[in-house]
Length: 379
Image (cartoon, rainbow, N blue to C red; front, top):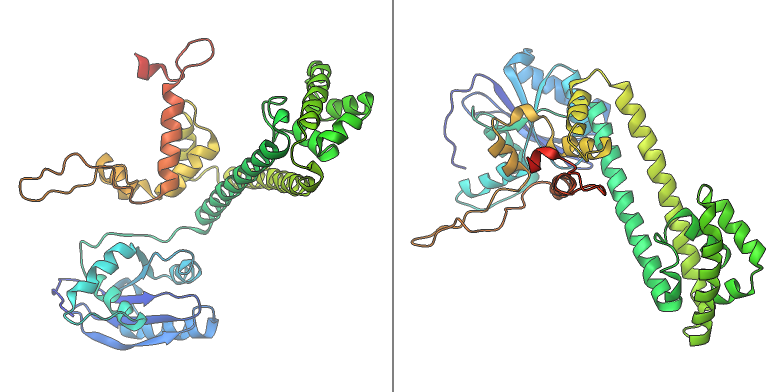
């Protein structure tokens, strides 16, 4: 492997993290291997303690002369990095794109976990290497809850879409009755009467009672809903579409899924709110409150953006932050061809780009009374 000597003053420890096994390499400030790369178990306390002894031995029992580097490979390095940091070591996380770029430094193309740990250790000697600190347990918990929230929301949207497609096939007359087919009132009707025939055969008072129980504060709409439901069911039966009895199973399962997702969303939101209150004095939560000051930005939206961004202090200017989100134009220039009319690079988090787009749309729209949501943009 080709290697450019640096003027590092620390011993570099490279760890290639895996699910059940890790490889570790230790090099001195001149890039000479101090400890032959070997494998250890990242979930075994005795194995990790043995690794710590080897690291201290290589650094002459002075943690200030040691830096430990790992790749950012999902959740695999989280527990190990937190523990090593708690033990007083300087742990740093490297973007996998940087480590992958070193594969072409060797004449012979080879990639193994053992070689990767050595490459990471050599990279750690570069003074200008861009790294980040491991996330704190609290911040990681917040990020996990937010990503779980968006995953559940996505599954909820898919279930609603499937329910709509099912109704289009068997009972399309139902769709115009309610503005939101996944709302509480609509779901209550479909749970009780999952076919047009059941709606026609239902007692009017019983149907009104179901609507009143679910509608709560919208009782004035109940009589109109009853009339529209009877008319829609009569049209569906008259047209003699698909036999709804065989589709009711799909409707019932989709309704159960939607209600389960609704419960999960409420539980996640409550847990996240409690976690933010618990760490109200931290700089991260204060930044979240600052982002919430942007018109149309909810606490969940602000928290999502900050979690995907990480520590904002690592960005020297706005251009780096834009590039991190993948909103910068890609460059493709060769010869006389100019590369200034390209699409955005779309590097980084797609969720962050989605959130930024939502915030932008919220700020350029106007309210029902014609006033701008964000008057600054219309000044």
